[in-house]
Image (cartoon, rainbow, N blue to C red):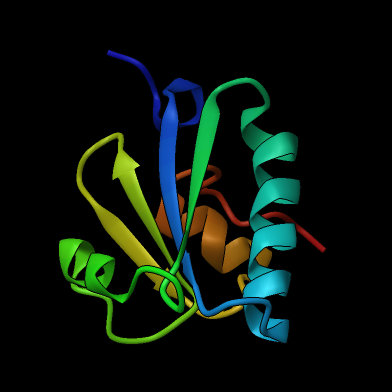
Length: 100
């Protein structure tokens, strides 16, 4: 069985247009994926300003929200994703906290 850090990640990022928090979330998750999962991830960005009905698919109640669809189980994290260690834990990218 693959460890979480070697599996393919399929992520959906729900945003609201070009808001500051939505833009930060996209930059932060791209940076983290390149750092921890280069070549093993896909990020689908869903703009709820343009497609509000898609919020129901993942029960989105706040934005920005990142949803990890693969590998199971589905996991969600809300916000601009600037707390990198928290994002790593939620996504199982690096379950061990990094020393600072």
